Length: 238
Image 1: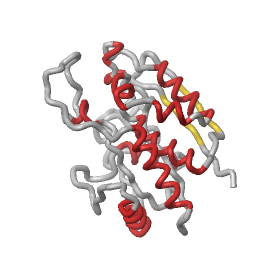
Image 2: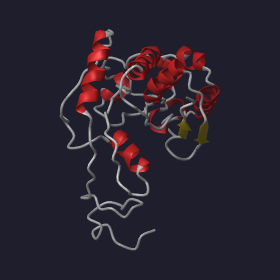
Image 3: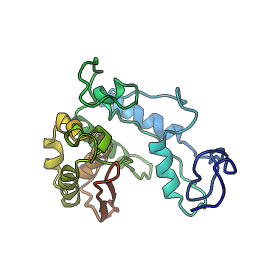
Image 4: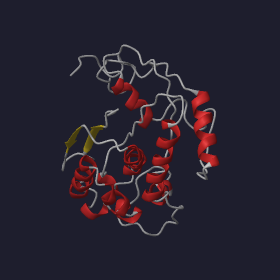
C-alpha cells in the first residue's frame, strides 16, 4: 500500500511503479513492417483494416499498453518497435452495448454482427506466422487478454468466470492440441464469457503453423475475481 492520497498521485490509484496518471511512455511503431504485413495479408485474401493513427483513443488501448508495461517491468525502457494488431473479439453482445455491461438476461436489444469465427482467426494467425517467417524481420508475437470474464458469463449469473472451460483450453494449449481450439465455436466462447480468448486464437494459429511447443506456462484460476489469468511462452526452438 502507498501512503500518498489519490489527489497527491494526480487522481486514481497509483500503479505498482508509483506513476501518476499523467505519466507517459514513448512506444515506437514500425510503419514499414506494418505496411508490409497489411499488404501481404490483403494479397492473401485476409481483408484487414488499418489506420495510421488512433481514432477514438489518445494512445494505445490497455490491451496493448498493459502488455508493454509488463514487458518493461524493471523500467529500463522498451526499445523495440511495436505493431498493434487489433482483433474484434467482442462482436455482437458487448459492442451492442457500446462497451458497457448489459442487464442480466436482457435479450431485447438488437445485436451487432458477430466477431470472426475462432477458426478464421486461427487461420489469420497462421498466415501472419508464414508472412514473417519468410520476411527479413525478427518478430515476437504477443497475445494479450484475460480468459473467461465473470461479467460476461450469464451461466453463473455473472458471479464467476467459466474456470472449467479455461482449464480445458489451457491444457490443450500446453499440449499443442489445436483441434480442441479449432473445434470450439464462437457461440461456445460467447456463452462462457471467453470473448477475449479470440486474441489468443491468433497466437495459437501462429504457433501451430510454426510447430512451436509451449515451453513455459502458468494458469491462475479464480472464482472470486473477474477472470482467470494465463501466461505462456513459446520460445524459439531453432
